[in-house]
Length: 176
Image 1 (cartoon, rainbow, N blue to C red):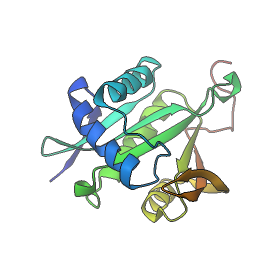
Image 2 (cartoon, helix red, strand yellow):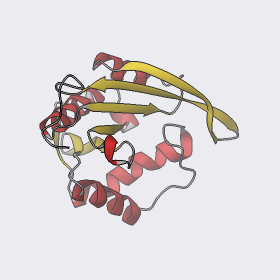
Image 3 (tube, rainbow, N blue to C red):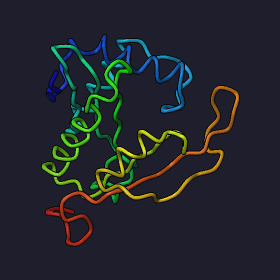
Image 4 (tube, one colour):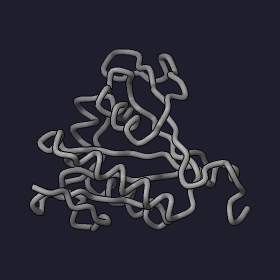
């Protein structure tokens, strides 16, 4: 049962929507309250891909096991070399290396595109699996925002982690 990573395809959107729906309804890994429908998830994916960011899918035995993408960290021009990552794994495939494979491929794709920093915004300090995944890839804790969001009737702290990509901030980018 090997993990295969590839670029997202339109036919993946039903599985991606289902994976994300569980995150919205049952967890605080996203701060959305309402589950987006498949058309909205497809629109979001198309927007991300059209702007040149990587959007990847992990497959196990031909089934979508998870997905990951990078997106704008902030919209101001000075942040153009920094991306925020998102990695979601179907609960049925957790513990099978899906998150690790997705994270490595996403980092590689971002380095190839010339990005210099990657930021992880993790929905809660108790999300040990996500924090450990990021630590394995060289992310370090930047800080914890206390009570930054509210979901499921409680205030949520938000973990911020960061890692350099390629040469990071050690030299100037190829364009400014």
